[in-house]
Length: 391
Image 1: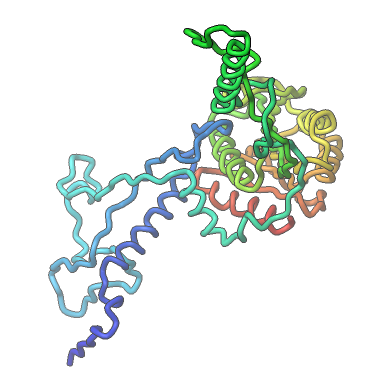
Image 2: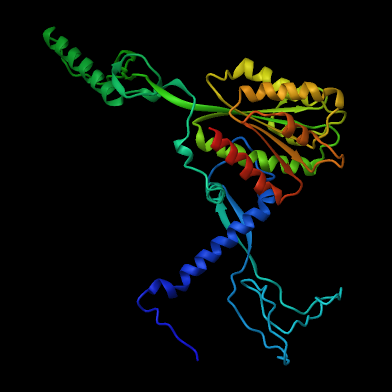
């Protein structure tokens, strides 16, 4: 006997729009996870607008539906493993699905695009990570001067601070004074033309006030030897981009540095970092030591939050391994977080990822392996959760 429940007392229970919105959000989140690499792989780390929109391909929302089958005796319709959106049918396949390489006759799946801004995309990631409010984190601060309030007037200044009303008033006062002088001298006080003079100009006097600014530097280090092909740089770019955007959310003033290395290292711009092809061997220590030198010259740890992130395929000349371990420990000592990402690891049985994990005991060191695009999401969760937890 069928029992029908009246939900009239709770209109939300039969509000299909709420359920549709929830399912739509789930589809968007799933699509972001699956396409994160494609979405961000060509984005610029420096100078990107937070309001830029990204197109996300998602599957259409479909209702449950039954498909008539043969309904043979003793054969159950389902297997118990069905999921939301599955069709229950007789198991037959249309042409094009049953191993036939020719043109199919079944209808395609509904795919459409929705747009999300960069801020919305990061919000999805934050919600999935269940991270604390970024605004409540600790910052290292420096005192800078900011333009304060206007405090009176002065005779010298720059054009943007010209006080027009005060300047006109000074001219009028000078004109009235000349008229009085003419009258006292018994002359006509009619003046045909009375232009402005430099002495009439008045400028707003601005009192500078101190302002606290939190600041950070992200140092991206990448092995660009012959084994680091475009597919590995593709993954590195996506990982670096998201990490840079999270750090930008936390700090008012942020700097970016790019270091590429083979057996020697150099500081480069972003374009060279991702596009310039190199060849030769790999000394990991060369990239780390260049970062240490850069920090010493430009970013004292007492004034800057330091976030180095290193990307490699895990290969290193064995003669450099001990130097690399020592350099990584030294960089960890002065960093908020030091991230190591191993991209599409080589076929060798042991890469630097395993040695770093075994021998680097600093709490702010975090390592991840990214073998394909779908691993980016988990890698970001590990790195960001570690950084926020330790801070």
